[in-house]
Image (cartoon, rainbow, N blue to C red; front, top):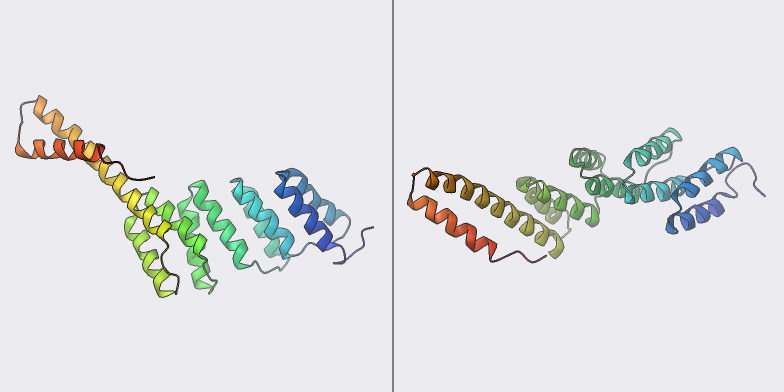
Length: 204
């Protein structure tokens, strides 16, 4: 059935996409290998489907391999492909790679989608990189992408969590000072703030 060239590529793409949706990623990757063996040429859609699925399961090593293979075959990744990688790095917690990819996209004039901004802002908030998170919010506005409620809520939740953590650390320090006999008004204030923050958890 298979012929050399592009004629059967859409059929394989449909098969690969179906296998990915059925959580049969190994079989999907095997279908790409079968395409190459039968000299059916994969296209950017083939690679984009596989990259996206590997990113979803946080297999970023394989996703990057597919991305580089895509480049080696002179295929231009789409905005969707870049977004999949960026989301994958954020989900994996690899903020450095995510920011490097985001900078590359900006330099090349590749549009950054709303979902990518949201993933980055959430990851930055989790690392308490608030200045960078707010910078991205500002960048979104300048680019015509109004900050979503979810993005703002994510930063607010992370910010409140960081404050609670700081108060707990300060409380531990001042509790030690009190035990050692160094009582002060500052000690009482910090301990009071800790108790107040514990009784008002942030909405999840």
